[in-house]
Length: 471
Image (tube, rainbow, N blue to C red; front, side, top):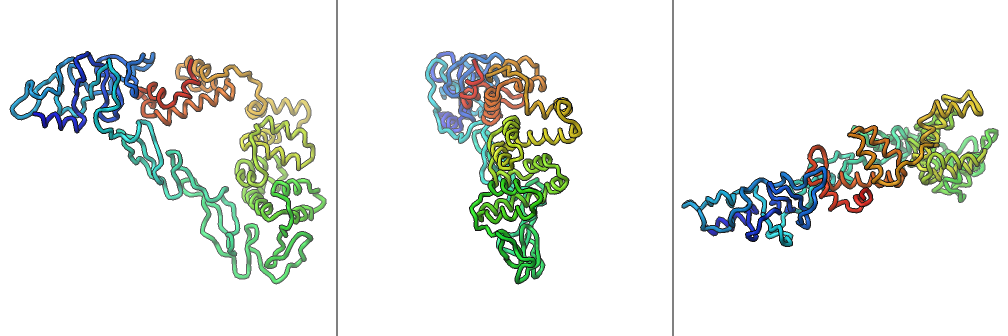
């Protein structure tokens, strides 16, 4: 009979009582976490294995363990009491050593050791990770592959994301070191990659994304600040101006002086010119039609929507929102240097909101001026105006206040969003931090209709975020 008990212990399937006291804490045989014994009606901390106060909305620990019979019966490890001649236990109250679903029963009145056997779990429920280009979730204490990323995707933060090699679809650039061009194309996954190189025709070289005829000299002769390379006039690049300074210089050029942009470039450094060429190449590929129509604000909206990486590399970017960008621009007058600095201080979203509002005003209120235009902007472009010049007072300054507001919404999503929108940026950030941690660490317990042990999991894995949203 002893070999039966030993086999049950190795399989982790036996229910063993630590003493004769009434027991109420059990250990799950798969996750090794402590749970409430069946029909005890208590709540248990899964790590410290202490009996705790149950949450008002969730009966934690209920239904986690398969019933093992009467918890008050005699020691299942007593091999000689009531057995048949075939070596199988007949003690129905103990549940039998062959019951693989039975949890290990622990003494509710004593400190519980981590485990009595080997811990085979290598991860915790709700966890996800990347393994190479595959996504893995924690299932039954073990990592299991649930998805593999396509060839044009890479795994980051347990999600398949694009590994873009270029920034804007349809952008054409010269292949470095070759007389050829390649085009930025979109894959079926929505990622951006360079196409195969297309060689320029014989006798042509590539410059600024275009194949052009090569000659031994340049005709007409290059202007000051340019040099002749393979029959093409290109900026000399012997100066010191950065890309941001070059952009400001060109922006200040009078329309009556067509040579001014080239004179600016003649003062540029090699790196500044390279970044400027990439920036202008993206603008030419995506936003040129708007620029040709003189739609400056819509062109800038296009730039920040489609060429932000090139814009950022050239002039930089900051954290300014729409209002800060507007306040900055109000001091610039006609100075392109000032407006370039304002753009450099703006975030991508701040600049998109700012130029989006100006584009709307151009389209809706362009024929008006003064107070009439202002009234038109506030009404005809209301959502954009309100996002740039919010007038709604902050009602909530903490995550807890937002949570209390949302608790009264009865599941209405619009109501819940309104609660968050009425909070300060710090309170909204705390709400987002809590939701992100809860969904990442405890999605298996808190997702869908399965909320068993949700709060216990959050208390263990998101203590700081929970504190910020609690009394």
